Image (tube, rainbow, N blue to C red; front, side):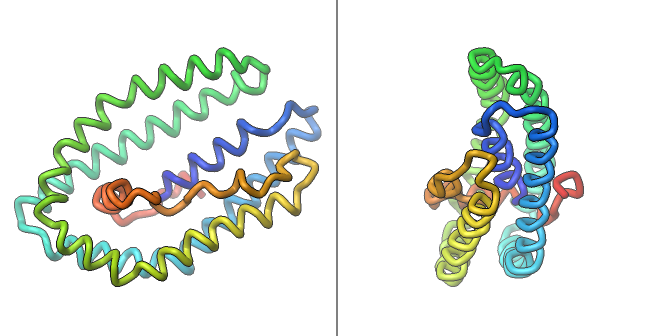
Length: 204
C-alpha cells in the first residue's frame, strides 16, 4: 500500500522547477514534511481498516491459493523495491536538467519492469477470479470509507501545496493522483490482493 505514496512523491519532485542548492534543501524538507503527514494519517486512519479487510480476505482463500499468493506477494514486494531504487536513480538526471534523458530513462524502466509485473499479474488473475465474490463484498462494504480516504489524501496534498507556494505547485489539480488504489476497480483489487499487509520502514 505504500507504493502509491512513493510514486506521488517522486512525480511531485519531477514537476518542481530547477532550484538553487538552498532552495533545493528547502524543497526536500517540505517533501519530507508531506511524507510524514501522509504516513501518520495512513497509519492512524487507513491501516486498521485495511488490515481487517486483508485478514478477512486471506481467511476466505483456499490453502493452495493462499500459498501461491504468499509467493507472489514476495515477488511483488521485491519488484516494488527495484522500482523504488530505479526512481531514486533518476534524481540525478532531473537535477542536471536532462529532461530528454529523463524521459528516455523512464521509458526504459517501464519496459524493464513490465515483463516481471505481467508475470505476477497473470498468476494473480485465477485467484482474483475465484475470490471475486469476497472482493466485491469487502469493497462494497467499505466503499464510502475508501472514497473518504481518497478525498482526504487529495486534501492533504492540496493543503501542503498551498502552504508551499514557493515550490511552484499552485495548481491543486496536480495533487489529485489517487494515493489509495485506483479509480479502476480491477487495479484497486490487484493492489489489494498483492499487498502483504505490511508498511515498509524504508518508506518512512
